[in-house]
Image (cartoon, rainbow, N blue to C red):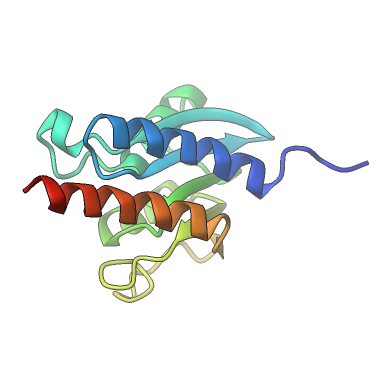
Length: 149
C-alpha cells in the first residue's frame, strides 16, 4: 500500500504556508513540522508583521512544535520548508536535534550549505522537493516587489 503522506504531500502543505506569507507581503517561505505522519506545527515568515528579523518560518515552526510536544527536542520530527534554511535556522535546528530537514528551493547565497553551517550529526537532509514550485513563488514575490518600488 502506498503511503499518501510522502514528502511531496507535506511540502505542498509547507507551500500553502508560503502562499499565506506571500499574501501578507512577507517573503513567501512556509514550514511545517511532522511527527508520525501528523502535522504538529505550521508556520510562515512573519518578519515584517512582527518587525522581528528572527521570525523566520522555521523558527516559528520549531517553537510551535516544541510547545505541542512539551519538550525542546524534535528528534523524531521532520521539518518541511520551502526554502533552504539560513544559518540562523540551521543553527536552531541543531539545538532541536530535528531528525530530518526537507527543503524545496536552494538558497545559493545565504543558505546553510553555502555557509557551511553544521547541522546536528543525526539530522538527515533531503533537498529539491517541489523545488520548481517553491522557487517560482519566491521569484514572483521579488519581481512584484521590485515593480512596486
